[in-house]
Image 1: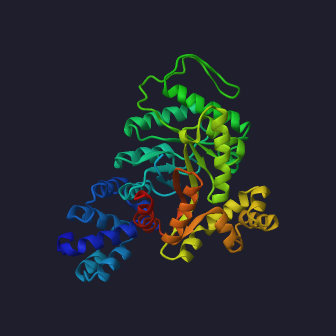
Image 2: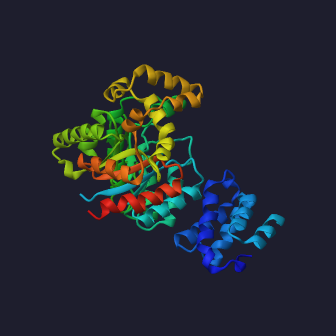
Image 3: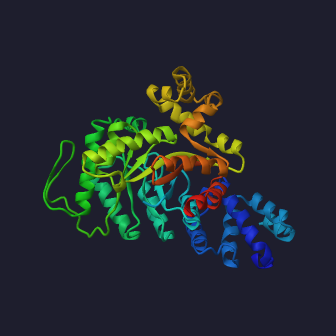
Length: 87
Length: 334
């Protein structure tokens, strides 16, 4: 799914997904191992890479699937947004 | 002494959020991170150990622990262990603690000056793996109470203080002092007490890293920053003795009403009673420009270290970023 996201959008998208993860009331649903993987990429400033975004998106879908889909839609990634709503 | 900047986190948040914010702060040039130690939040040393794993440079430690709930040999063990994970980066803040939290577990804050002094002595002895017994008036350890492991580099001990005698103690024995105040007038008076304590002990103020441990909030517009700091200020006003309130022209009756509203969870009334004067007395908040001006005034009183404490701002991530990019450079470029 992340492969379909244009590289130029990855930076802004990773910011929005991270904001969502930091603000959601369902943050505790993110598994510790996934949270640590995200920290690993954050430590290396690589959350906007394909691997970084894959983990961010995974965590956001777990914590707040509606918001994840909305973020994609708002960024013009409608196909991914629809796919996320079907997950 | 160089100007340095710290950030405080209360580990009420999930471990990965606090760690995320710390990595962000380190990248932006903050120098220290302090994690509060209250039994009703997540454990301070577990939080610090995780943070140590994801950071490289920032100094880190409890801010502050207390010797009533945690015996000083255990504090020494914790900071020594952390010093192995983050060599040379560990700092240790210790104070008498928070009376309200201690009362929840039926612990009386007896002889705070003596207790903190002895705790600091024991932590240092343990870190040095000193032989021989310690016979204090509050704490006693036998000659066998030594660590079975090497303790690494020296861990500077900062004493959290507000009252004149604790401030003097910080001046006498602390590597640093954490002044629990935000108003330049209060900080100035506190520094005088630290200096008195230092001189009595044959030291100088220049031997001590003097930190203002403030309630802080920054946002693009001052109004949002102030709104975010209101709950914190409400609790500070409610917990302040009348002498402090009177010094800031805050009505004692108003504070009592606020205390009662908070105790009865009447949040709207309690927070609605917080006015501009209270916010100015007990916090540093506003736009980046306003905060820069207020922090500048604090450095002019003689502090060497500025700590941004809760709530940081209406949006923690944005506020850390704003501080790091718009406030900090003003001082780091000096």
